[in-house]
Amino acid sequence: MWKKEEAKSQGVAESSPALPTASPAMSSAAAREGSTTLPISGRASACISQGIRIKGEVTGSEDLFIDGHFEGKLNLTNGSLTVGPNGEVKADIFAREVIVRGRVDGKIVGREKIQLWSTGNVAGDLQTERLAIEDGAVLRGRVEIETGKPIDKRFGASAGSGKTGTVSIGSGSAVDQ
Image (cartoon, rainbow, N blue to C red; front, side, top):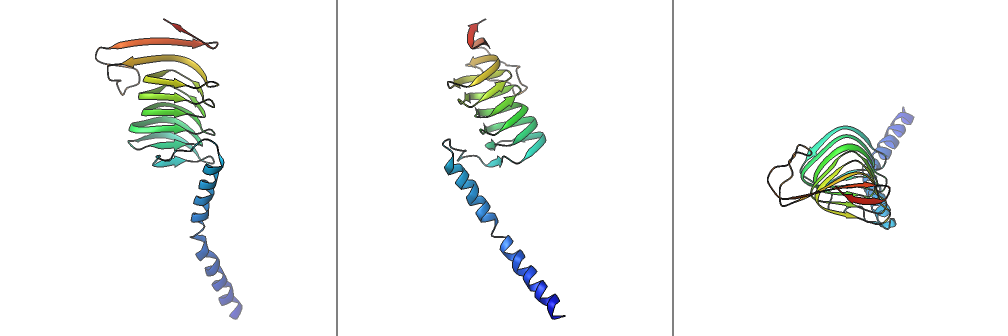
């Protein structure tokens, strides 16, 4: 009888410190963030970390950071999407701003801007008002820069009048069409 109570008290003692272990896990994420030379994303409201795989549809208006695997559709109406250096996304993306540091396969619509960092790799069409591509980034697809008119949320259909430029990128060169 005495041994059972001792085992129970030990089990309780072991399970109660399990709650504070979330804090060290969070500090390890902060340590990872500090150890990388590239900032993770200080303003992201939500994070899909490296060990997470998601298939489906994500919609919202907050900022999102993806450093894991995502497959499906992403729609962040007023939010910013950052694909981290370990992130792999196979999805059509619609967001206010898109930053790619990992790999994206699919169409990207960034209402305000799209940034491709040197570690970024995109296979798909881009549609945005502003585009920044660092040396070393890989882009396979079409780029459509639209200024002065809103971009429709249905991926590609646009309304209004303004300047539109389409640039095809292939074999490391840009050619106006």
